[in-house]
Picture (tube, rainbow, N blue to C red):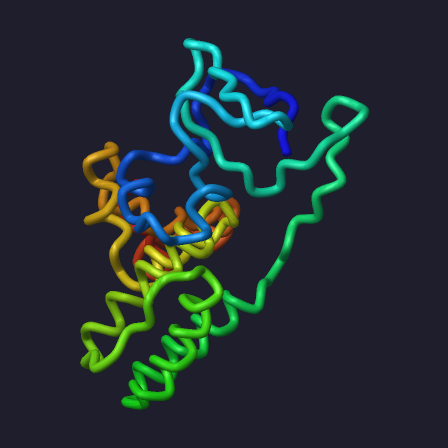
Length: 192
Protein backbone atom coordinates (compact mmCIF):
# COMPACT_ATOMS: atom_id res chain seq x y z
CA UNK A 1 0.00 0.00 0.00
CA UNK A 2 1.01 3.56 -0.56
CA UNK A 3 1.80 5.79 2.33
CA UNK A 4 2.50 8.80 0.12
CA UNK A 5 2.93 9.59 -3.54
CA UNK A 6 5.88 11.76 -4.52
CA UNK A 7 6.23 13.34 -7.91
CA UNK A 8 5.93 16.54 -9.84
CA UNK A 9 2.95 18.14 -11.50
CA UNK A 10 3.96 17.80 -15.13
CA UNK A 11 1.33 15.13 -15.80
CA UNK A 12 3.59 12.91 -17.87
CA UNK A 13 2.60 9.26 -17.92
CA UNK A 14 -0.70 10.04 -16.25
CA UNK A 15 -3.67 7.89 -17.27
CA UNK A 16 -6.11 9.67 -19.54
CA UNK A 17 -9.86 9.47 -19.20
CA UNK A 18 -9.93 7.56 -22.50
CA UNK A 19 -7.72 4.84 -21.00
CA UNK A 20 -9.68 4.78 -17.74
CA UNK A 21 -12.92 4.32 -19.69
CA UNK A 22 -11.54 1.27 -21.54
CA UNK A 23 -11.46 -0.77 -18.33
CA UNK A 24 -14.61 -2.57 -17.23
CA UNK A 25 -15.62 -2.49 -13.57
CA UNK A 26 -14.57 -6.11 -12.98
CA UNK A 27 -11.14 -5.74 -14.63
CA UNK A 28 -8.60 -6.43 -11.87
CA UNK A 29 -5.91 -4.51 -13.77
CA UNK A 30 -7.75 -1.20 -13.46
CA UNK A 31 -6.77 -0.28 -9.90
CA UNK A 32 -3.05 -0.81 -10.46
CA UNK A 33 -3.00 0.71 -13.96
CA UNK A 34 -5.11 3.83 -13.54
CA UNK A 35 -5.84 4.02 -9.83
CA UNK A 36 -8.58 6.44 -8.93
CA UNK A 37 -8.76 10.06 -10.01
CA UNK A 38 -7.93 12.69 -7.42
CA UNK A 39 -6.05 10.60 -4.90
CA UNK A 40 -5.26 7.21 -3.44
CA UNK A 41 -6.05 5.00 -0.46
CA UNK A 42 -3.34 4.99 2.20
CA UNK A 43 -2.29 1.97 4.30
CA UNK A 44 -5.34 2.51 6.53
CA UNK A 45 -7.77 2.66 3.61
CA UNK A 46 -8.27 6.41 3.98
CA UNK A 47 -8.58 8.44 0.78
CA UNK A 48 -5.71 10.94 0.43
CA UNK A 49 -6.25 13.76 -2.09
CA UNK A 50 -3.51 14.56 -4.60
CA UNK A 51 -2.28 18.17 -4.67
CA UNK A 52 -4.48 20.32 -6.90
CA UNK A 53 -1.53 21.25 -9.15
CA UNK A 54 -1.16 17.65 -10.37
CA UNK A 55 -2.89 15.87 -13.23
CA UNK A 56 -5.10 14.15 -10.62
CA UNK A 57 -4.35 10.73 -12.06
CA UNK A 58 -1.40 8.37 -11.75
CA UNK A 59 -0.45 4.77 -12.34
CA UNK A 60 0.59 2.47 -9.51
CA UNK A 61 2.63 0.21 -11.75
CA UNK A 62 6.12 -0.04 -10.29
CA UNK A 63 5.23 1.91 -7.15
CA UNK A 64 6.95 0.34 -4.14
CA UNK A 65 7.66 1.55 -0.62
CA UNK A 66 11.14 3.05 -0.24
CA UNK A 67 13.21 4.36 2.62
CA UNK A 68 15.32 6.59 0.40
CA UNK A 69 13.78 9.06 -2.05
CA UNK A 70 14.22 7.98 -5.71
CA UNK A 71 15.57 4.54 -4.71
CA UNK A 72 12.79 2.23 -5.87
CA UNK A 73 13.23 -1.50 -5.59
CA UNK A 74 10.69 -2.06 -8.36
CA UNK A 75 12.16 -4.05 -11.24
CA UNK A 76 11.28 -2.94 -14.74
CA UNK A 77 9.95 -5.95 -16.61
CA UNK A 78 11.49 -6.08 -20.06
CA UNK A 79 9.00 -8.66 -21.28
CA UNK A 80 6.04 -10.26 -19.56
CA UNK A 81 4.20 -13.48 -20.20
CA UNK A 82 0.99 -11.62 -21.06
CA UNK A 83 2.93 -9.66 -23.71
CA UNK A 84 4.21 -12.92 -25.20
CA UNK A 85 0.70 -14.42 -25.21
CA UNK A 86 -0.71 -11.37 -26.98
CA UNK A 87 2.14 -11.28 -29.53
CA UNK A 88 1.62 -14.95 -30.35
CA UNK A 89 -2.15 -14.45 -30.49
CA UNK A 90 -1.75 -11.61 -32.94
CA UNK A 91 0.57 -13.66 -35.16
CA UNK A 92 -1.76 -16.68 -35.08
CA UNK A 93 -4.79 -14.54 -35.87
CA UNK A 94 -3.05 -12.84 -38.80
CA UNK A 95 -2.23 -16.32 -40.14
CA UNK A 96 -5.86 -17.44 -40.04
CA UNK A 97 -5.64 -19.39 -36.76
CA UNK A 98 -8.23 -17.29 -34.97
CA UNK A 99 -9.47 -20.06 -32.65
CA UNK A 100 -5.95 -20.68 -31.33
CA UNK A 101 -5.36 -16.95 -30.98
CA UNK A 102 -8.62 -16.49 -29.11
CA UNK A 103 -7.55 -19.09 -26.55
CA UNK A 104 -4.37 -17.11 -25.78
CA UNK A 105 -6.18 -13.78 -25.50
CA UNK A 106 -8.65 -15.40 -23.12
CA UNK A 107 -5.79 -16.56 -20.89
CA UNK A 108 -4.83 -12.93 -20.39
CA UNK A 109 -8.46 -11.92 -19.84
CA UNK A 110 -9.06 -14.74 -17.35
CA UNK A 111 -6.17 -13.57 -15.17
CA UNK A 112 -7.63 -10.05 -15.30
CA UNK A 113 -11.00 -11.34 -14.11
CA UNK A 114 -12.94 -10.32 -17.22
CA UNK A 115 -15.20 -12.50 -19.38
CA UNK A 116 -13.69 -14.55 -22.19
CA UNK A 117 -14.36 -13.74 -25.82
CA UNK A 118 -16.00 -16.24 -28.13
CA UNK A 119 -17.07 -16.47 -31.75
CA UNK A 120 -14.98 -13.58 -33.03
CA UNK A 121 -13.93 -13.15 -36.64
CA UNK A 122 -10.32 -12.54 -37.58
CA UNK A 123 -10.96 -8.80 -37.96
CA UNK A 124 -12.89 -8.58 -34.68
CA UNK A 125 -10.16 -10.41 -32.79
CA UNK A 126 -7.48 -8.16 -34.30
CA UNK A 127 -9.25 -5.14 -32.79
CA UNK A 128 -9.73 -6.92 -29.44
CA UNK A 129 -6.02 -7.78 -29.32
CA UNK A 130 -5.12 -4.12 -29.89
CA UNK A 131 -7.34 -3.08 -26.99
CA UNK A 132 -6.13 -5.94 -24.79
CA UNK A 133 -2.51 -4.90 -25.35
CA UNK A 134 -3.41 -1.36 -24.36
CA UNK A 135 -5.13 -2.48 -21.15
CA UNK A 136 -2.52 -5.05 -20.18
CA UNK A 137 0.65 -3.18 -21.12
CA UNK A 138 -0.18 0.45 -20.31
CA UNK A 139 2.80 2.47 -19.07
CA UNK A 140 5.26 -0.28 -20.01
CA UNK A 141 6.61 1.29 -23.20
CA UNK A 142 4.62 -0.68 -25.80
CA UNK A 143 1.92 1.67 -27.03
CA UNK A 144 4.02 3.79 -29.42
CA UNK A 145 5.46 0.71 -31.09
CA UNK A 146 2.04 -0.96 -31.27
CA UNK A 147 0.69 2.15 -33.00
CA UNK A 148 3.61 2.21 -35.44
CA UNK A 149 3.40 -1.51 -36.17
CA UNK A 150 -0.33 -1.39 -36.85
CA UNK A 151 -0.21 1.80 -38.91
CA UNK A 152 -2.37 3.72 -36.43
CA UNK A 153 0.13 6.26 -35.17
CA UNK A 154 -1.00 9.29 -37.14
CA UNK A 155 -4.74 8.64 -36.84
CA UNK A 156 -4.38 8.19 -33.06
CA UNK A 157 -2.02 11.10 -32.42
CA UNK A 158 -3.06 13.75 -34.97
CA UNK A 159 -5.36 15.45 -32.45
CA UNK A 160 -2.30 15.87 -30.20
CA UNK A 161 -0.45 17.81 -32.91
CA UNK A 162 1.39 14.97 -34.60
CA UNK A 163 2.34 15.40 -38.23
CA UNK A 164 2.16 12.43 -40.60
CA UNK A 165 5.89 12.33 -41.38
CA UNK A 166 6.89 11.98 -37.71
CA UNK A 167 6.19 8.23 -37.83
CA UNK A 168 9.74 7.80 -39.19
CA UNK A 169 12.99 9.38 -38.04
CA UNK A 170 15.09 11.62 -40.24
CA UNK A 171 18.15 10.08 -41.80
CA UNK A 172 21.27 11.07 -39.86
CA UNK A 173 22.67 14.30 -41.26
CA UNK A 174 26.18 12.81 -41.25
CA UNK A 175 25.03 10.11 -43.70
CA UNK A 176 23.18 12.53 -45.95
CA UNK A 177 26.27 14.76 -46.05
CA UNK A 178 28.58 11.78 -46.64
CA UNK A 179 26.66 10.66 -49.73
CA UNK A 180 26.03 14.30 -50.68
CA UNK A 181 23.58 13.35 -53.42
CA UNK A 182 19.86 13.60 -52.65
CA UNK A 183 19.06 11.55 -55.77
CA UNK A 184 20.96 8.61 -54.23
CA UNK A 185 20.07 9.15 -50.56
CA UNK A 186 17.13 11.51 -50.17
CA UNK A 187 16.17 12.70 -46.71
CA UNK A 188 12.94 11.24 -45.34
CA UNK A 189 9.88 13.30 -46.19
CA UNK A 190 9.22 16.24 -43.86
CA UNK A 191 12.82 16.66 -42.70
CA UNK A 192 14.22 18.66 -45.61
